[in-house]
Length: 354
Picture (cartoon, rainbow, N blue to C red):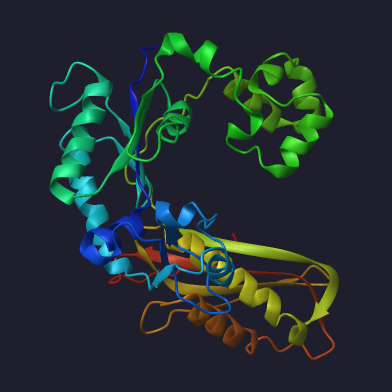
């Protein structure tokens, strides 16, 4: 099979950089894109703010404590989406195989490129130069023979960097990396691997596949493949999000009146995830599972799209009022979701949590 040429482009501190570009007074300052409030989370932080430990998805109040001089800017997603469309137009000059992951990053398959450039590295350089000259923003890019490696590479020299992993370099590049650099290896998995004596990708390569599958099932095969740099997943253009949801199973069954805190927490999580989408969700869904394992869903498509985490929580709490199984009924799980993603004009009916 022919070797693919994949570029992963990741805009640097995208929302914060757009704000700094459009307001010269913000340049060089610690900018935090977030509503400042008890339940707000950070959407983006400039690199000046990141030096203080401020990160995306962090509670805004914690960011304020870490960086007392931070300038908080309410997010303007209409503007960010417009800039994202401009970056997409630049990508499209070089390939039609574009898979957006969010407003600020995308995979590009440039195995064949429209500009006739001889290498994927040249394509990545041209894209970064166009973003700098036309949009007055910076982007980092990774070039590699597959999506997994390209994404690692784009983060290697951030911000405003370019890193290339040639096919013949994979076996030297991967083994020293900590296993946490592999997709799907979070805190829990890395701790379990550490108990097996595996802390680097090289350690993972040395573990027999049947042992990995014994510990992790199908995910064990995926870990084995990633450790050897194997990722055959294609770049899929226009992969549209159908829904974003989050669930919480309670340590003990709760009555409906006891679920407000969980609903607000889940709404915040779903809202933060939805901000990375290029399209707008119109329908809010609340899911409940009773102590007897009966599943209930309630949904609402409001006249105007949800505008904030607080709005999402308020609608979900309103949907809770439409559940009438008695005050003594207890629930073991709750979920909050956004569905019916579109450009803001169309509406549809589909099941969430299917």
